[in-house]
Image (cartoon, rainbow, N blue to C red):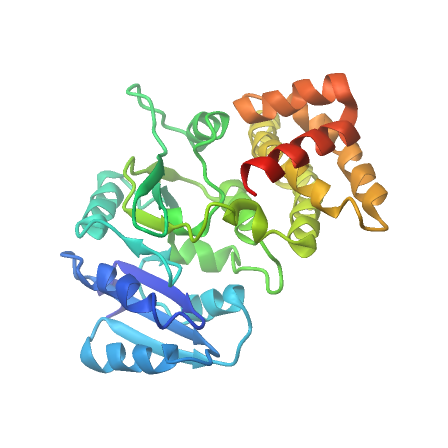
Amino acid sequence: MENELMFSIVIPAYNTEKELPRCVESILSQHFNQYELIIVDDGSADRTGELIDQYASANPHVIGIHQVNMGCSEARNTGVRNAKGRYLLFVDSDDKWGDENALDKLNRVIHDKAEYPDLICFGVKILDENGRLVKTRLPRLPEQPLNSKYEIFRYLVYRNEYFSTSYVKAIKRSFFEERGLYFKKGLLSEDIEWSARLMMFCSSVAVLPEAFYERIRRNEGAITSNIGRKNIDDILGQIEKGVIDADTYAENYDFRKVYLEYWAYQYAMLYGLVYRLKNENDYTTYISRLKKLKYLLKYDHVKKVRAVHAACSFLGVRNTVKLLGMYYGRVYS
């Protein structure tokens, strides 16, 4: 029966035969057993598809799906369309979970509420390629209870603890499907706008202040070396659309400010990346697009946004882009 499954865990997999076993085993080790693990082979050219079939034939929790290569977003969407659990979780095939009780803890959070929350946020540990802890990012709520969606998101966003990644969220499947929260095909850094839609449309949110997800950082330069022109263009486009959505969908003026705080952080972080396009013919166009969004910097409760705001006040947009771009180049070269 569909309601017997609490969780559907979706792994999009593409050419990760070396990392996939570690990822899958970390989930199959869960003590809580009311889950299904849906692994979508996105047209892999290595042994990824074969490994998925082996897991599916050996373990009743595992469902293997094969499709032609359509990208991570469509692989996730395929997983969702085949899911039967009450809640959806997403895991990248080269990452892992580090707690055998992760699902049990999430289940407790769900049942602590009078009604099942639409969204549950939790944390992540960033590990280097040797498995050493680099940093931990946790969402935390104050001891004094926050009851409304607005209060919780305001607290998290102002502290930069509402993270714009899919793998630190559990989403009620009925909410996901009713609101059409599928991932946008062909969009890079797609988790940013997807996380914004979750925040805007959910009716209730809960927090598990633990970091069982373990993100493997392949190299120290990954934060910038894997960012190209399309990433930058897609992120900037998401911000431009996001500020329009704030006027269209925000429940009230106060929540609109919280929503713009979220986009202000994405906007500020883009400054250090746009400088990578300095030799492009339309670099000036990117600077012009940034200037039109400069007003976002007044939503600066987050320290990094406040720093970019201060720099822009003295140096202007173009020089701040140059300054942060050169800084990123030195730090991550």
